[in-house]
Image (cartoon, rainbow, N blue to C red; front, side, top):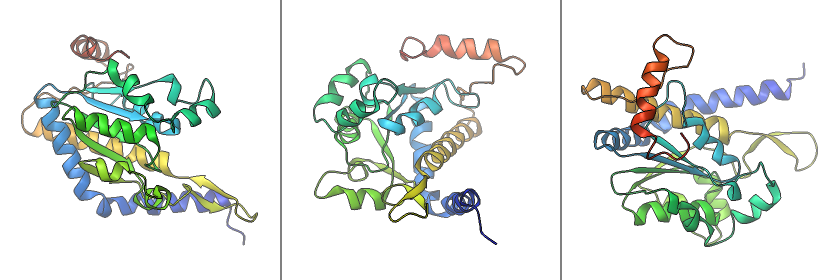
Length: 244
């Protein structure tokens, strides 16, 4: 009986996600502690990604069950929706990101999450350097194996970050042999990256509540009391989050 590629892909994902419970336990603990302390001092959690990685910045933004202290760093030039080929070239262009980040007042009170699976392009590397220069705690969501294979002497965000959440994606990201020579499909970095991000944010909220500190958690708009709760959080963060 032939196993479908969809089944093989899903089975592989389950194995990878299950493995995170041990492989990512220590860095998730450190990430949650850093973010909880950030929120306690009224700091912000900035999230940057270029290309497909920018989806994780949007994943955390204004999210039911998410934290209102998260601020996505969104710049059209490094995204895909207005020109994927141009965006791909721009994320490799040195000097672009510092100018894009000037609208975000990152400081030593903050955490900056930089997402890049290959971890070596100019945009994420410069974003990590920007966060470090501002004194923020920098967390990388990346692939150690992919970035080592791609580095070729270049800096990696894994080397710059204070905390590394390794998504374990293989070089090239795709995991399934499509049946033609060299053709791989089934990328895993977005699914695993989102899982790591939400796991860290969930534990952050738990720690705040356990310590008796306010946890700025959004409710789904369709849940009782959501309008009042969310409006209160929007008022608190709107002046510091340009995307609210």
